[in-house]
Amino acid sequence: MPDSADNLPEPLILQRAQHPISRNDIDREALKVLYRLRDAGYTAYLVGGGVRDLYLGKKPKDFDISTNARPGQLRKLFRNSRIIGKRFRLVQVFFHGNKIIEVSTLRCRSEFDPKEEEEQVLASNNTFGSEAEDAFRRDLTINALFYEIENFTIIDYVGGINDLNDKIIRIVGDPERRITRDPVRIMRALRHAARNGFTIEENTWRAILNNIDKLHLCPVSRIRDELFRDLHGNGVAPWCRLAISSGLLPELLPFYRDIIKAEEMEAEERLNPTRFLLSLMTVADRLHNEGQPLPDHLLIACLMLPWAQTKFNLINLRFKGQEAYAFSRDLRDHLDKLLEHLSINRATRETITSLLANLPIFIQYADERDWPKWLSRKSYFENGRLFLQIFQESQGGSAANIQLVEKLPERKSKPRKRSGRRGSRNATFTSKKGGIFGLKGH
Ligand code: ATP
Ligand code: MG
Image (cartoon, rainbow, N blue to C red; front, side):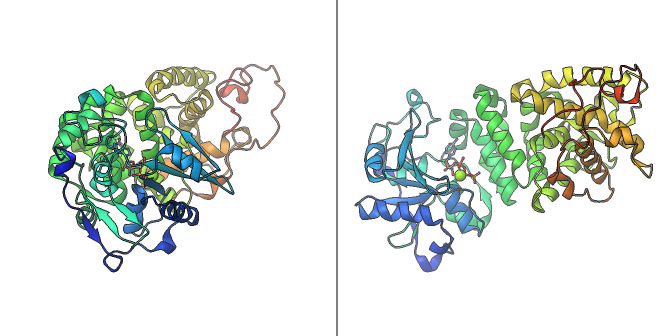
């Protein structure tokens, strides 16, 4: 990172003919905001992931805008807007159809670089900064580009264009320092490497390995949010590979510390926990890429399955009488503890328990031509069958039927009145109505 604002380098400027970003690919409302700012005499840029994705020919998830206008000035300029955020204020501009464009004022430091640790006080000595300062406070070079609509140029202070061309993930500035200040940047580097199939530059990789244990210093809520962004992205299997080889996975899920091993990623045995996890995530990726992303409960059930297999030999369990219920209670207690830090809501945790605890039952009946009626009537039947299919596909079986994801469990039949008969087949799963199986929702 440069020492002071005086030392900031000259940017590389790509003229319109030198880059592939076209205005036609930019969201209409984002363009309106950019033009309104320009017409009012401010500078305005498209920044962050939007520029990165457009350059790569991908459809951006959102379009973030940065400007030299201050939040108060933005509020005056956009009547339908509000200021959010305490320390680093951001303006949300509202459009028809619940559309929101977020506009931030160029900053001199990231909200995650604590002020007292600033070794060099940058020029403006307050929150806001120049274009260059804003680029240098960003996480990755590929996320630090500016696109401006006056001449349609891309402005690059940090070598992001070269890194996009060379498919390289590089932390802006000194990676050791930037990661120490905000260890969540480790997760962001791995995410973008996994999603884009980019290589992590050597110094960045070394800083990741050196500081992986610092992640626990970050607020759990941030880690959780970043983890869920990873799980919901396309490329969970490549992400898992990087999370395993960097040591991130056991930081996030400590119960995998002695189970998942980097040297076993190519294990021959399909049920080897490391290979098993990667195979399950490959199925999740396939479904995602075919437009059927898995919901949280199925993703987390997949994430937990290799653990459950290691701990209980889950897929070979066969229950008699009340055993299934007792097992599910035990499993739920384990999951409650293991997943506590991810603050997953109770209903989702129960669904995850149901998916895992019932998997051996689905496996047991999978070979029969018809599902037993008592099973097909269960509220969790569709979910359970899909989970079975995901498991089977991970083991080399045929592709899971993605159509199933769409109609996740509507209750097929009305709940039956309790017969009061102990040991009836329905009671295999729960001894109480509204117990941990037979869940609503999801
Ligand atoms: P996505 O496509 O997943 O939204 P993104 O890069 O846009 O990717 P955001 O979380 O939306 O990710 O962040 C927007 C921008 O803010 C990033 O591109 C990056 O420049 C900057 N940023 C986000 N988090 C950090 C951080 N921890 N440190 C520094 N800069 C960050
Ligand atoms: Mg974004």
